[in-house]
Length: 213
View (cartoon, rainbow, N blue to C red):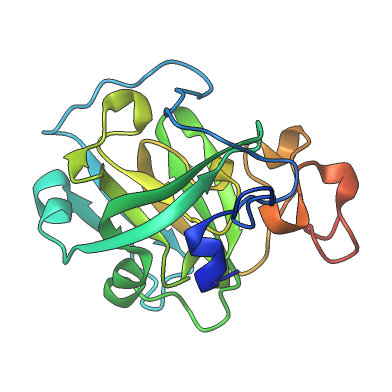
């Protein structure tokens, strides 16, 4: 969902802020929230993979130096956490997901991706959400490298979805021909995660929102 000029400017006195999705509140600082321990970054062994239903059938890999040399982009986007805070106007720097899709194309019948992070954490997305023009693998925020607590060296940012759809410490992307639930989706979170529709929990899902069972 795009932002209108009025949304970008925020609320007028006495009005609700139109930039806030339902049930959210503005947040000035950046809380540290994650499941499990903070991983230790090992630059000599770190690699980023794309596998699954690739167009060539082969796995694509970049080491840290190679990934850091990929074309970079900057995106300004809000961060909506399912715990109900929203951070406005973050400047994210990193590698656009579209760049990865161009360098490692999916097979024509791919519909979804699973983004894998350290310790086996995963998050599923529709291919269209992953390929959105503002989705990127962020390495910086506000011109500064991410701290390890916030996902260094790489975290996925998908500004139009709840933040759990953008894992910290990303290591791989799996192309899929059918949807399946990721870590939090298997534990009761909504399969799609649109904050403007307040898609927080799986009991809110409508037919077609989740994988066929």
